[in-house]
Length: 252
Ligand code: IPE
Ligand code: IPE
Ligand code: MG
Image 1: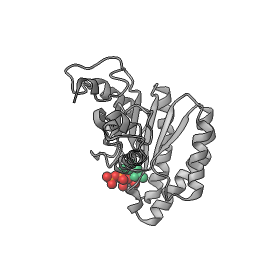
Image 2 (image 1 turned 90 degrees about the horizontal axis):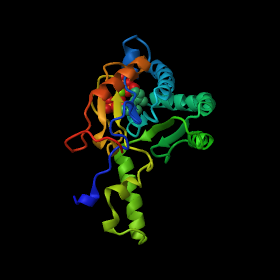
Image 3 (image 1 turned 30 degrees about the horizontal axis):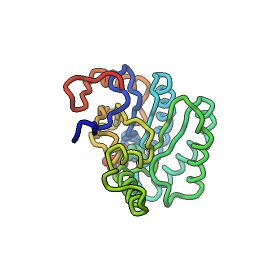
């Protein structure tokens, strides 16, 4: 790589609070199974944990919060569970949108809307439109999202531009590629948290996670609360971010 082509880094290097936190909200099913409850009950309690987390994130000074709510691969689950999850998304937007808006939260959705039911597409659109001018916490909902699919979509958009003669192969740099992802203006996540004890990314933000700090917590998502978020932030503060260099950089 040439000197002029430094890799993009998260806009924050090491402030006390990460600017962008992304969460893989995992373990709803096991939370329910441990209590002899149906998996759907775990998902319902998971929505309560999400409400707590959005509030806490704003209070703790996090600027961007991305949550993995439904993956492109979650369609593989039994039809009834998929319906349950879609129903919860509908209810979350219908019941919580007004409150999110009055709390100055800006909602954005990443993932593809192709193939989604029309009413869900309209709800996602409404959430983005209503809150587009808010400048408090940015809540990015990864819904019907897969990172490989996002990267493939970006490659397709670039190929289309190239075919139209608007781009040439040498224009395709890391920065140019990033501009074709679902949320081009978003800084990379400083911290990615996954609950449930699993230690994998499951096709979440693969491009953006290049230099993210990863924190895996041994709790199921419905039990997640402000104290656990603070614990993850504490762990983040102990990490030294180097971005391939020798010392942690300061400033952006
Ligand atoms: C996370 O909990 C919610 C979604 C993936 C939609 P899970 O449903 O994956 O719960 P576990 O991992 O099976 O316990
Ligand atoms: C990742 O969890 C997706 C979400 C949290 C929405 P999964 O439960 O789908 O991931 P795997 O299958 O355990 O890797
Ligand atoms: Mg899971």
